[in-house]
Image (tube, rainbow, N blue to C red; front, side):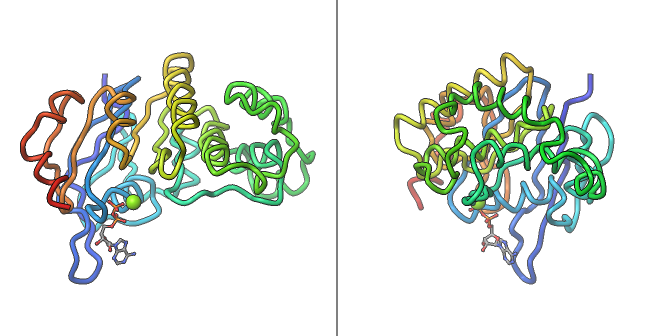
Length: 247
Ligand SMILES: Nc1ncnc2c1ncn2[C@@H]1O[C@H](COP(=O)(O)OP(=O)(O)O)[C@@H](O)[C@H]1O
Ligand SMILES: [Mg+2]
């Protein structure tokens, strides 16, 4: 069976800077792959190249064996690929439920059907299931902007799951989240992976979070793959230790 995602020799140059310098890896069905590396090593740029926000300068991306390099984010959504961004993408003035419904609409139908369709486009029940799954029931009607930062990050992740995607790429889901919410987020991501059979790629700065969540880890340094393996292997790798201690 083809891997869910194949990234082959991706390069991205910005003027004289090569932010991503020939990165290759595969993601297999049901995996939670972690991507770690020091700040500025190209993690977000790599995500943007995989997800169509940026055109890679070189290389190829395949989803389910099909070349998707350069496809638009909305077309990738329709194929079952979803993402979160490093910075929160929630609408602070809308309620938690409205945010989820809106996220679901982004993946569904045309702009016209969104304009003329019923306001919740039948997504209310899906949103309520997601609210229950993420244990946000007591906050369903609260304005998202009034939630704690950790709760907002949880909502942000839930929004990426609204389309029932096969592959979700999460860019620093744990960034700035306190310990209690971190455990909560990790627990929900693991449950979603197991119960819904979703495959994840998680970019994260928090080593402990990655090591306990991910089944395999890719380490980036200066736009290149420095190491790859099981969490314990990667943690013990001298080159990895040096790259982290050097920054
Ligand atoms: N749009 C851009 N234009 C120019 N340089 C960029 C752009 N986006 C990122 N970079 C540079 O590319 C490098 C990698 O950045 P980024 O992918 O955000 O790293 P990370 O997510 O690992 O912190 C950095 O040196 C950054 O300054
Ligand atoms: Mg980043």
